[in-house]
Image 1: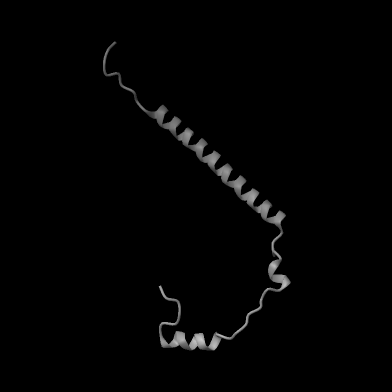
Image 2 (image 1 turned 180 degrees about the vertical axis):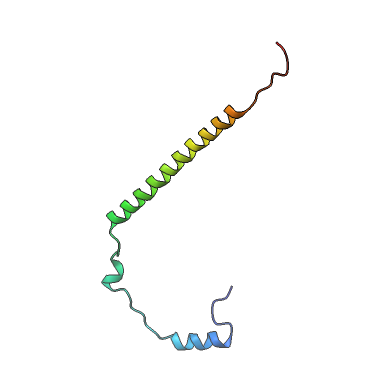
Length: 80
């Protein structure tokens, strides 16, 4: 696979920007905008909410199984 301009517009763009120098590595770009503690707090809150949802889902499933089991009518098919 070749690297380079394939059509006229790409060739013009390559010629235009071939000699451009970009220096955007200032100190502000390397510093995080979000505190690590705030990020960890948000992740902890999110994981706790998910764990609570899983626990409630499991409990609801067990309750539904119980309701279905209690409402089922069992018929004896053979006499012992």
